[in-house]
Length: 486
DNA sequence: ATGTGC
Image 1 (spheres, chains in turn purple, red):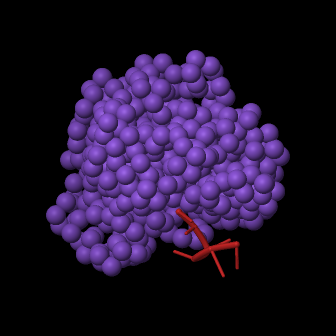
Image 2 (image 1 turned 30 degrees about the vertical axis):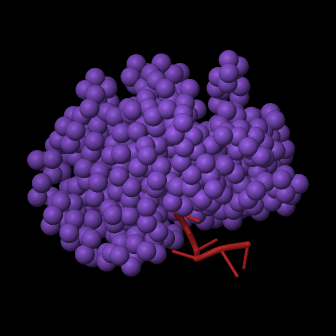
Image 3 (image 1 turned 180 degrees about the vertical axis):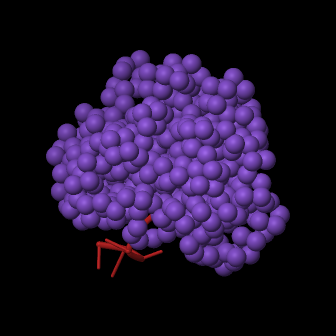
């Protein structure tokens, strides 16, 4: 049997691209890493494997804790981690959702081709940068009061529809139709809501961005047809989350859970894994607050998309409808959700924690929008600003292998600190422009350095593994044209 | 990711 060991964590090769940390000691279940040997070497480089092993100790953990091919270490629980816990006897853990609740991506189509855009890149990137708030701190498309925030938290994109920032079609092409009904604005602290009211419709900082891209490759033409994608087509990718509001929700509940459930915490190997037992008051209120933050993030991306449509209207002198700027799909990659999964022949309700992991439901699943039901759920994998991104479709194996999940991006290989030593923002920008015809505009040169293409894993390799395992199949690849970021 | 720590 092939085995690998990293810092005392031993893995056995189950089959190609599937590695298992066998159950031992306090582990409740085994852990699995879905990766090629090359990606496993990178995953073994930091604390990811120890964190994954720790996660198997969460009460009610079912089948195995999982790490996707793009996994790296995170707060308590790996980014690229999937953990499914029983909703009756298990627990829910904010660290296994992540600080940026409903960080996610949406892709909007257009009927423009790359030819239509060439020569207008600088104008477009300038106009987008001017119109869409980005960077740390306040400033949003909508500067609202507390009542508006409450409405956003509970109604999600339904609020945006009523307020004139969305059309019905947008809701149909969003995970959960842009609304988690379990949301409760009262479970979200006043402090979190106050942070949110200044940031509704804003990109934020770090790896968040808006990118105008062209489709360069189509791998499955029947699925690409169903998604409305074709070579040379211009699309827009929006990657952002719930900003300070989600961050505050995570922090508030971590502190409350540590205090109230110290007995459970004492049994866990890492304080950062703090969890509320299923059925407890805090498990319920965290879930309702998290769902509210999820709704906030969907409205956030909706407002950014709305602004993008307006910018395209100005730059191209046509209505957005005439440019067929329709939402392809919006999918979260930092959430927990009550889902029913088959576990050894039994249907069980689980809290599926996906932290830096994307839902990837296959064809026929009732939660896949009608328009895509025959081909599978669109999965959007953002790459770095030099590499481009992928559209996948949920694969036939995802439910049995990964609780209906796949990767979420390229994943970092270099710390932000080291990136700032290796790169200079303006140099990265001019090289991308001169060598790759990619136009980047950012609030901060430091952010460009931190997000330089070289700090990321090979997104092609991540997606290749997802496709080979059948958890998320390659549909199309895109390449950046204009990129705005914090 | 984040008014870049509690």
